[in-house]
Amino acid sequence: MPRRIVIVGNNAAGTSVASAARKQDRKAEITVIDRGNHPAFSRCGLPYVLAGEIPSFDDLVTFPLSFYSMMKLDLRLETEVTAVDAQAKTVTAVHDGQTESIPYDALVLATGANNFIPPIRGYDKDGVYGLRTIEDGQQIQRAMQTAKSAVVVGAGFIGLETAHAFIEKGITTTVVEMLPAVLPAMFDSDMASFAQSALEEHGLRIIIGSPIGEILGKDKVEGAMVEDEEIEADMVIMATGVRANLDLAKQAGILLGERDRTIRVNAQMQTSDPSIYAAGDCAESQSFITGLPTISQLGTTAVRQAKVAGTNAAGGYAIFPGVLSSAVTSMFGFEVGATGITEFQAQRAGLQTVVGRLTTPTKPHYFPGGKEVRVKVIAEKELGTVIGAQMVGGEDIAHRVNMVSIAIQNRMTIMELAKADTCYAPPVADTWEAVALAAEMAASRLRR
Image (cartoon, rainbow, N blue to C red; front, side, top):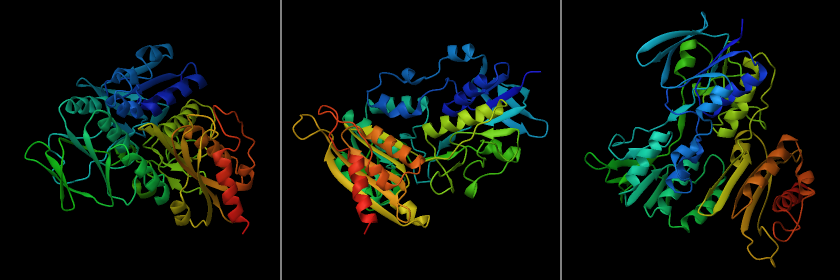
């Protein structure tokens, strides 16, 4: 009898689970269930449709229906899984009012996460939006046609990318961040300040260290109160993060992770029930550096976890090594990126650090078109092992983040990174690579 694999959730993680499972077992019966009405799409592209850099939300669909047919996957959209019976190994699915019990040999929870909307007074007014789905994006796009001003709550990637879209469309925009810096999950205060200055140069107003007190207006948004200031706004975007969807995990009785924020998994992405796996935004990760539980709700993490979960659910063997939460984005013609842990996170983990930082052009000074890049590299002080990097610059941030990520994964020391054999040609790169120079500065402090 073929192996029966049921996957709940059909975005980055769910589809990648199904693909990996099919490659492992070509005869398995694979059912993919999702309550949405779209095949898998790129959430990360939503702000760039709003900015007009991607023509349509339809362009974000990464796996058309033909993919599921080709891979012999039973895709069930607009279907809600309402119950998991871990003893009987069945899930209860409801579609168009009809209820069905679907048996499984392996179940993969790729249930993702939902927008977190803090209970701010006035959060339920017309004109308050999150940005998680294509429908969310379409609502915001319609509102943008008449909006003159906006407030974005949260200065993470989604908040800043959405603010970028608004500025590009001529909408006066204020970003309000409760914590004392932008990009608080990935940058230390020094690099965050550098990034904030670059954002503000393009007309974006940023308020840090202040929570939004109230959303103003009768039935529809008219503004927001931040401390003693009333900020006019025709719409408010809640980019305050997401929370893992754990309803089915709790119902199945499987163990949750630290502070019950995600599903606990082992290196094979297996939950406390050996027949149930989890991957993506709903699943816990482990820091590659500290070995401690962490949450890494990134598309790259989701697909890497999913490949492991799908392979194992289909009878193979794969291991997930942990995360560095490497991330990069582009706004207003410049880029920001990071990998590993920050100085602040290192201190919380009990690690002493040394740091190298510098600002340099991306091309030799005599070649036109070079753009400034600021690089910060962090090493653990006792052994000199590279543990993180943060970057802001006009171009080429992604490959530099990847360079440090590979160094961390291979347990390189800061001295070894400083000696990296890098390429050079005047149109594309200087003789000395910025990451290597920053690493050399950190290494000099290590020797003191």
